[in-house]
Length: 218
Ligand SMILES: Nc1ncnc2c1ncn2[C@@H]1O[C@H](COP(=O)(O)OP(=O)(O)O)[C@@H](O)[C@H]1O
Ligand SMILES: [Mg+2]
Image (tube, rainbow, N blue to C red; front, side, top):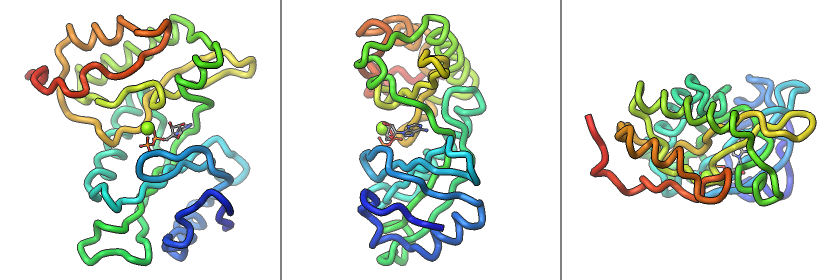
């Protein structure tokens, strides 16, 4: 097992024995840094020779443990409706300054399918998402919300991931980053409004329902 050098800035604070054991046990190799986010970083990861995965590393210095659990559970549920990247594995290791209460200093890992780009990057480079791909995503998300009452809450364009085919055409959209997801059933009218009213061409600027808790129904 080799840890990537460079951008794994949190390296020193990681419980490397725990991480090494987890990675070895599951045959995972962390390949290289991909992106950083609010509470951690995302790395490209390989299982044997297949590097079509990413591992999201979340430092729970601010986020309580329950948020990490909420995230992977919501993602597993959303993935079963084709609305999120498939979760391959998840585990927790501590840092060296792990607290007694098991919260401060814990590090959560989610290994999932890798997507090729984000909606933001893709559309900023002039990419157009085919209408059929958008429709498929809308249907899947609608289905998830109406059947499970799960709502993403943070569905801006950095959190919408795009799968491309060999010629660079967008073939699938999913929502990533389920840390803020809520169990709320959005009224069909409002969900429809968001899904049918893209702000910038074929993209969505932000989630207009983020703070509209009064819209919870059922
Ligand atoms: N499954 C994935 N495939 C491709 N890129 C990803 C994937 N998961 C995360 N990323 C990249 O990492 C960034 C941060 O991940 P995200 O889950 O949104 O974390 P945060 O909660 O820190 O915003 C994303 O905006 C995206 O660029
Ligand atoms: Mg994000």
